Image (cartoon, rainbow, N blue to C red; front, side, top):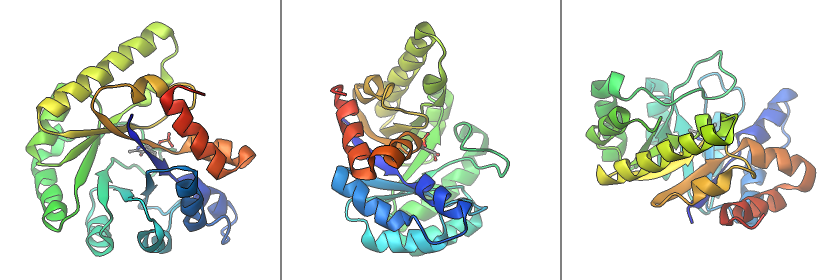
Length: 240
Ligand code: PXP
């Protein structure tokens, strides 16, 4: 079974709704770990709409599993990443007007720039993951950047309207995972996964980590974060 990276961004979304100090994502990370999170994932966005710089620096000191920093491939973020030294970094596309990350990174379309960007991070000892759609050309481009990981975008799978569509998207993820491994990449996945749709993705051979946020924070609002994380681990095992 893959490990679970709990994305705590939306704890900060609640805080930022009132521009106040609660709830604190640093406390949320502790509770997520008590509930069984294998890692903590957080996205420092250019517009700072949820997670703030203060959060990532405190999380770096307090997270006792591993810290995965999601970020855009910009000069500002590179500077922060090299200073922060998270356990790994996931590069994601970012547009100010989007509600959430909308698609995979176009690695094939900006290969030269990403080779340099990934190289700077990995030479400083931070493994890099690239968030991409499970397409052969993108995966080949990822491998050519020397990034250690890819995170397969599960958004289309999560949004599938029919069983047939879901099965087709699962097949794309399964084949994408196998192809990425053949290329020498390690494979994570995430986006849009829920308690109801996570199990088939957790069963994909070779899948190492699932990064899941919104559904866990949503359940946490009703039942508490420790319980919500524990429930997700059960759902990944197919026993919820
Ligand atoms: N993985 C990546 C790269 C993401 O950008 C996000 C959303 O921030 C997630 C996983 C988690 O997605 P969700 O909140 O839908 O579980």
